[in-house]
Length: 307
Image 1 (tube, one colour):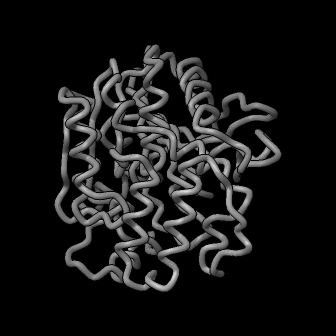
Image 2: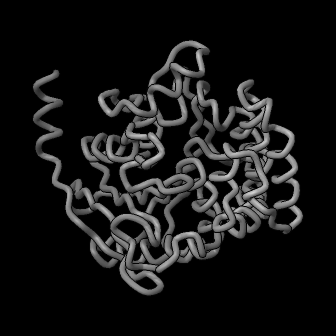
């Protein structure tokens, strides 16, 4: 079995693919599982997260690359992407922070058109992870050429509520919690704050360049998007996720009762298996690309796509 898995992984051929961006090309990686195979477009999470699911802030778990490779073994093609202004998509815009949810939705539809042109697919499966789940749900409001939407570790509540919960859940944040919550409240009301007046640990999180994006993002309601979808919806959530909770997946399910909800035991935010309640140990998996993706994640997505 191990030899067969290694041979299957060795046979996976990845190639570059592009879509038109606002001022230059958007870049991604295409894994072709064969003629006529369904194609999943993988949308990345928040911040400077690349097409593999890594970012320079310490995440090197490569969940999107591992997911794409495992899906190929199940006969499913994929495209995973760099967001406009970042990494391979750097030429798409001069300022990656000057962006809105609507901009990311436009990029998603540009990717769908490019994928259909390159593969002949009639429609594309749009999978969003974490913040990417919000983009997928928003893109799904224009359902033409979208087979279905798949949210993985996606919030059901507004992102401001999720951010509050994340900050409050970590006891180490106690000294900075009050100004953090005040800043979130101001951004919810469409007001920017002086980031230089905040405690030092909060200044990178709420730097002036990203505050307009927060204001736009906090106004988006993922549950409302889920409720108005006209295409099938799969909701995948790990019960060891310490960034987005099972409660969020239940909110999405309540908003769209026809959706399929899959809650995965011992799966965390970066889609790795983790047993226990130690936050530090859970976060340690974020920096370990040697850990395989949780098989249940692959099973849930593959079974939905191939059903």
